Image 1 (cartoon, rainbow, N blue to C red):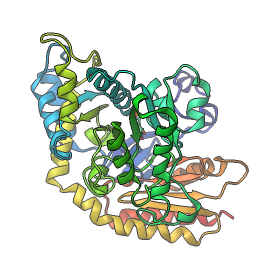
Image 2 (image 1 turned 45 degrees about the vertical axis):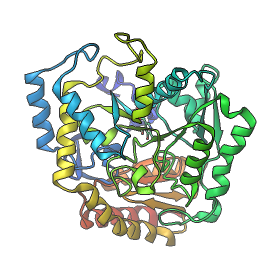
Image 3 (image 1 turned 30 degrees about the vertical axis):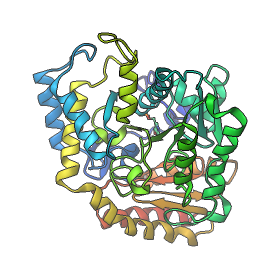
Image 4 (image 1 turned 45 degrees about the horizontal axis):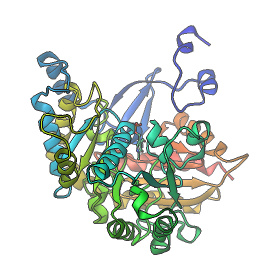
Length: 435
Ligand SMILES: Cc1ncc(COP(=O)(O)O)c(C=O)c1O
């Protein structure tokens, strides 16, 4: 192994295998990455659900550059800068009414852990501080900080860290065998699966539960679209028992499911909503937590004037370069009407993806908006085939994400039908070889 590969410990990567056979991008433009030999590789997952407007957008690069010359850094503790207000207002403008107090962070993981603290702080501010239990779901991914790890429902992400984490009870995941090959929201099981929440409330007592964390579409686990009626019923049960509902829209946000946020796609309004990734089109690390005005106001009102109301924040909360990238990205999304374009492209995406149902190696296909997954039948052990296919696709010129045996697709909202067709043609070549 060349010495230059040695020092970098890659995240979420089989490092030894990677370093035997590194797959390295050196450049990106539009819908393509280029490897170190200059070979184009079509990006069918927006990098990692981030580059909704495609790669190398000059408007964003320029905004970041100019901002760094104008004001490179300021503390966000006791200080602020104009673009932080602007970024927060712009994000609030995309959200359902009243979900408009925005706390800025640097990643999805930080957004989730911040949301946990806001939920706990709110109950405490209202004299309900015994509400500490959190509820999430099997197969959930809520990032890798300690709170998010505890909420998570993917065993490999939790196994090594059990025991040091806060109390979390898990609902069932929403995959059901009777819903396979559904396009959009599956028909079966919404009411029944949501009833799990009532059962956990009956078991633990509503007076002990702070909040329910849900990815409206569970993304990283392989795109589990909520069955019809599920989110509505979860919302109703939360309301009945005074639980906060948190939507983790780190993947779903910014047009991925057809509307600006999945809250709008599904017509269900959470109390708190986390986001990251496409908030800057991937160009700067940034996340945000949008909070219902009444939650924000209660937390502030519970502290004396001139006291810090919420003891939380990061050195890089609201970093000027990240805010500049975000405002520029949100400008692009608006000028180019990207959410509507993504929604218009979704039927072509679904058509192409679901056409793979004819292949013998395919076990299930799921999709909504420009988010979808092909689940392969395992071969040689869980996840082995998914990993091998992901590598073979890269070698054939296609970048996707795999989780276990699910191949995950989230093309940029600026994609044309021809880009999708090119991705599907590479995919067919590779998947047709599987038995
Ligand atoms: C739903 C969800 N929440 C949180 C995260 C964590 O985000 P980050 O990797 O930016 O910390 C992710 C990342 O994929 C995610 O999909």
